[in-house]
Length: 48
Picture 1 (tube, helix red, strand yellow):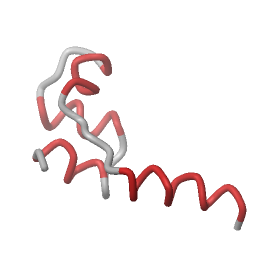
Picture 2: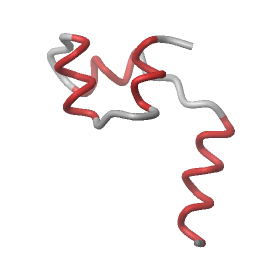
Picture 3: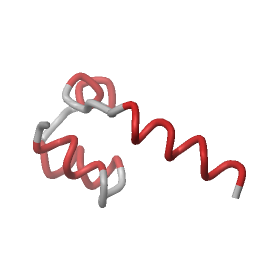
Picture 4: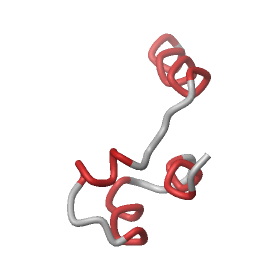
């Protein structure tokens, strides 16, 4: 798990991009890895 991925659990994209020094959201996406559990939890919130 990367630092960027850990930040993703508590921070918004703009904050992460600024902390990591990435020039764009596309660069940030290269370093963000979402687990199957995180994806399932995101979808589950749609039905709450």
